[in-house]
Each structure stands twice: as C-alpha cells, then as structure tokens.
Image 1 (cartoon, rainbow, N blue to C red):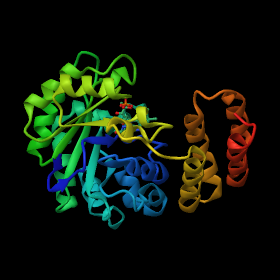
Image 2: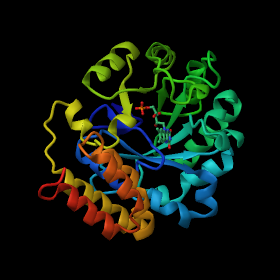
Image 3: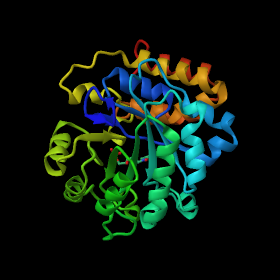
Amino acid sequence: MKIGDVQLENNLLLAPLAGFTDVGFRRLAASFGAGLTCTEMVSAKGLVKNPKAAKPLLAVSEEEKTVAVQIFGAEPEYMYRAAKHEFLERFDVIDINAGCPVAKVVGNGEGSALLKDPIRLSEVVAATVEGAGKRPVTVKMRLGFSGGDFCADKNAEIVEKAGAKAVTVHGRTRSQFYSGEANYELIAEVKKAVNIPVVANGDVTDKKSLKRCLEITGADAVAIGRGALGRPWIFAELMDKEPIFDLETLILQHIEDLRSIYGDYVAANEMKKHVCCYLKGRRGVSALKNKFMTLKNVEEEIEAVKAVFGEGAL
Ligand SMILES: Cc1cc2nc3c(=O)[nH]c(=O)nc-3n(C[C@H](O)[C@H](O)[C@H](O)COP(=O)(O)O)c2cc1C
C-alpha cells in the first residue's frame, strides 16, 4: 500500500496506543515486520508550547523504516506549526487523531469531537497538510460520535478533499469507547466513499480475525492495537513467518530502550504495564505482577525479569 508517495512494505500497521507505542515497543513491532509504526497521540499545542516535554514521545528507532507520528488538536494554527516542527522531521507520515474518546480531549473539541464538526475537521486537516510539506497526512477516526450516528463516510470524503492521503477507521463510535464489536460493514461503507486508501481497525488479534476484517471491509490495510500488546511478534505470525526471539532478551531490550530515552524513573513506571502484557497467561504470573508493581527502579525490574526466566522459575 502507498500513502501518498510513501510505499509501505506490507498492509499490517501498528495502531497508536497512548502509554504503549513508545519507541521501545515500536522498535519491536517494526523488527517483527509491521508495515508502519505510529507514536502515541501527541498534543499539537503541547509540542509547540513545550517541545522538550514532548520530545521523548517522538524518539524513533533505527528499525522503524516507515514511521508515523500522531498529533491531536482542534486549532488549525497549532496543527500547522506542529506539522512543521523540527521534532517531526524524521517522520514519514503525519496522522491526525479524530477518534480519541477521552472526556478531557473531547471537551477541548479535539479527538473524536472533530467528527461532530466537519468544518473544523476540514480546517485542521488542511492546516496540517500545509505544515507537513511533502509528507502525507492521514486521519484516524471512529465511525461517528454517538451510538447510531454513522458519519465516517462523509467525514472521510471531507478529509480526502482537505488533502489527507489515507484514512484509518476504528469500527466503533465514540460513545462505544471499546465496548461491543468493531463494525466492519460500516468500514466497508467508508471504503466505498473515498478514493484514498482505507485502513480498517478494531479487534484484529489473529489470522482468522484479520481475514474476516479484510474480507468484510475491503480495506487496503489493517491497523492492530490491543492485539499487539505483549506480543509485538503478531506481525510476523500474521505474515506466516515464524517469529524467532527470546522473550527475556526482548523485554530487557525494551527496558533499556525506555531507560535511554526517559531515564530511570519514568522508564521503570512505563515498563510495568508492558511486562504485565508480556507475561500474561503464564503460570504464577499474578503474584509476579503484584511484585512488579512495587519495584522502584529499572535495576530492580531487570533483576525481577531475569528471575522470572531463571532456572526453576515460571
Ligand atoms: C490503551 C489504549 C491507548 C490508545 N491510544 C490511542 C492513541 O493515542 N491514538 C489513537 O488514535 N488511538 C488510540 N487508541 C485506539 C487504538 O488505536 C485502536 O483504535 C483501538 O484500540 C481499536 O483497535 P484494536 O482492537 O486493534 O485495539 C488507544 C487504545 C487503547 C486501548
């Protein structure tokens, strides 16, 4: 699939996940073959006003051949300035968040609130396109805002007209948050409405769900979020490749990546949820999870991980 002039190696993309798609996790997803990785959502206004605070979220690894940054905001001027920002130069694609359901974000007219305001949505996309220069801009949206209010087809037409080069559709409305099932039939309606590539998103966790999603939506690609948590090797599996890795080494590499970007304290906190995901389903893991939550620094976490995989452990 091509996004503007950017050729992707395959059509299995990593969806943005706040608090999870950090540089360490994206490195792993890319090394297991994700066709495009994406940062978590970054506030356009925050980036412009306090770039230093946003910088760790914008780190990129060597493994990420094609990488997107996701920005959010409702003010065209800040979207323009963020897209132009030097910290975004390394990114191949700039994605706009029009799907975040969180009340604070919606209250500011950002994220999924843009779905209710097509004029604002169009202005936000046009300003981002202008700031992005030659790089393609994409939009990630939900089916609509309230339950039963399907407007992703119209909104996709609007963002296409405003210059977006692809649209990702999460098959739920804002009011659904993450409940129920993703509606692939409605994503198919979006696919019919526009000429730019459509990326389907929601509930793809294995080969069976991937096949079903692609068949029903007719989408050009699929973005995988929760299905990749704790198992970034899902991208290899979905491409029928045997993922070769050692889980202990993988976790330790992730820890080191975060330590080098965030420093000891933040890295230790960020890794806790990842480690719980990596070890999910293993025998005796709930006691370990509880223990992990009490650890205060990276060194303690490294020791705990080594103990898990050590002789006679789980
Ligand atoms: C913990 C978490 C964080 C998320 N953060 C973002 C985000 O930063 N930007 C975004 O567009 N979507 C975000 N999403 C939504 C996902 O990208 C995706 O649309 C949703 O989880 C459905 O796909 P999935 O079933 O493959 O997870 C987040 C979802 C979760 C569960």
